[in-house]
Image 1 (tube, rainbow, N blue to C red):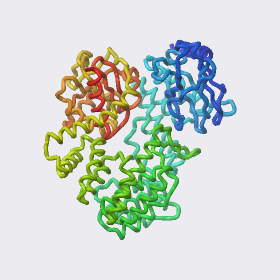
Image 2 (cartoon, rainbow, N blue to C red):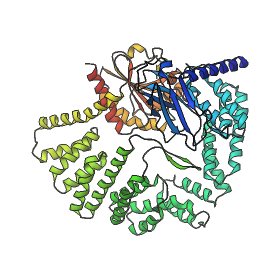
Image 3 (cartoon, rainbow, N blue to C red):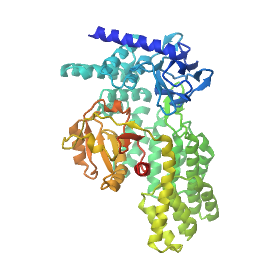
Image 4 (cartoon, one colour):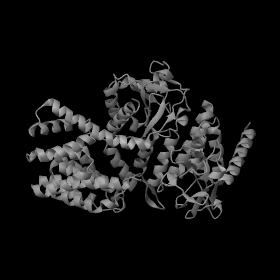
Length: 638
């Protein structure tokens, strides 16, 4: 049977290679890091309309972090091409070619995509087949042989690089899926030995310990993450890594006064070799003394935690320091200086996903909205500067900062704070447009509505019906902004007919229950912290539509890493969320729907088509965007 599977797999690879040569070419054949890769597509040899275009390369699995996941191709004669330089850290990737709306998608075969392997001096570098194994569920979503295929490529990786730590562990986990309980126990023991070897190879280096942590998580041994940290503390208590772990453990204690005293004890152990581990201790002490109004002590630690380092996360931390000082009205001159430093440096702050590699340093993921995000961050810093100068009794300077920030300020909290400052100056006329902007960004915030309502009364709008009409107009304005964006992103993919979903009474959810309704399907799991964090916002939207017969919510446990019992137990333990919980019994549903991460929320129209897809934790923004999507689909189908 295994030989037959391998033969079938090789046959598929041969067929894919022939198709690739006919329609798509990738040069050079054995690309190395730093090489310029050219992907060429001949639509005349495909099912695409010959005159169709433009076409795009869609990377469905890739570690090209600095590149967009969708690359536009350029027309050159009868071909479409795209060129890019392989980054130094490049590894295996797979892609398809599609038109703008993905109505036409070209791939190597029904079960495989086009692939780029990375070489060095003609030899495959480590990690290519590991990447290939990861991509299998992406390339062949409905295959019954995903696990077997992944195992095949993991073994190929280990045949070339037998010490590949991650490949060793991934292979063990795959083999555990099909093994007997006794085999699973033996394999787990083997996996733990691999992790232990990795730990002992360099127990004092943070990067190596991160890989140890990753190893435990791969094996599903999450509880061992804390235990290995305790091993480090026990064996290397005064080394840099030991001090760091001791501090992290200490910060979990609830009694902050006791924590401060214990930090003092640890500071007595400071040496030239371990002093860089105390940064988090200085941060804790600074925050503690600011919250206790002790500017003398807090000022001692501020210089120790604001030394600039080439770390793209620092600006967020510094921004938190500014906000802390402003909230407590302490050391405002220091807050002003630090805030102006942030403003001077804002263009250097990345705002996207950041990856770190020892050989390359920090890498900022491609983000088409980077310019807009930086503009918004700059506006927040300027608004904070206005609030600081207002507290320093410099009202004219504060008004100048507010005037600069308000046009591009998107933070509802800061807009509210600016408006409240205007009201403290007894200037409701200036407060109203700021509160209008705040309301458009956070119409679900009752405090903003109350402040705006109060300001309207002060300026002479005493009639309640008139004020309600005013708010209705604002609602139309903020929704219209979303509607214009929805026209660009709305999809039309049918939701699968064959679903296997049950509620918390194990009653099947029928497809007929989803017809003639706008359906919100939210995929979650009990172990998914971002999923749980989004529930308070999702629940607010649910409560608005709970009695609306046109709208149905399906809060669907994905079934990944969870049983029905897990889902039911969690729902019973969290009665504050009374939306309808369901459990997915179809292990292939995520693949059918192209869901690769959770939380993911699908919004279906009344005909059962997926019109919108929301991926990841959005926080408070979910309130507006989801509400607008529901209303948009209602209007679309009138």
